[in-house]
Picture 1 (cartoon, helix red, strand yellow):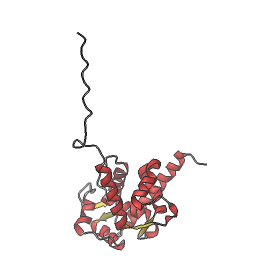
Picture 2 (cartoon, helix red, strand yellow):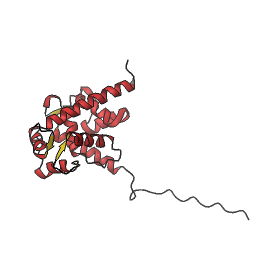
Picture 3 (cartoon, one colour):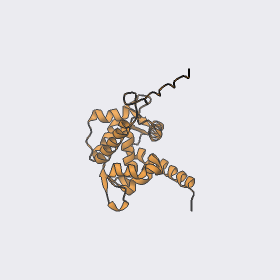
Picture 4 (cartoon, one colour):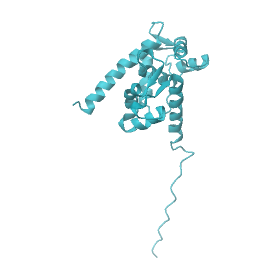
Length: 187
């Protein structure tokens, strides 16, 4: 039986191959650059309605050299930043689309719970896997046969991320503990 570290290495290697496949799927012009036109075409193919400005913003949020397109290194950097983000403040709109494409084998327009398990495991870890699958799919039962379209997948992830951000302690929500009464000095 493989160790947990070996399973993790295999999953990460598989994740890298899936990420490359997702980039190649999105890069329909085969020019090594992902632009808003290509992303928009994929969203239409997956029956997701998005305004042109929204699609352009998805690229702009992560376009490091401001050339209105993402190269493979920029795409990888976006993915790694979002995957490793502990704060929840990293722009995730394109990341979430990429996660869907990685989970939907053979260009399907839906993802199943089983399709999503590996990526969700890498994203949230073993301890949070079931709770995150429940949040996104409404169940963690592999036999449920639950599938989601891209629009449903994005809506569920958005709601989960908003809930995560709202549950954080901020300067506005922090409540300091009551002061400890000073001990009376012995006279």
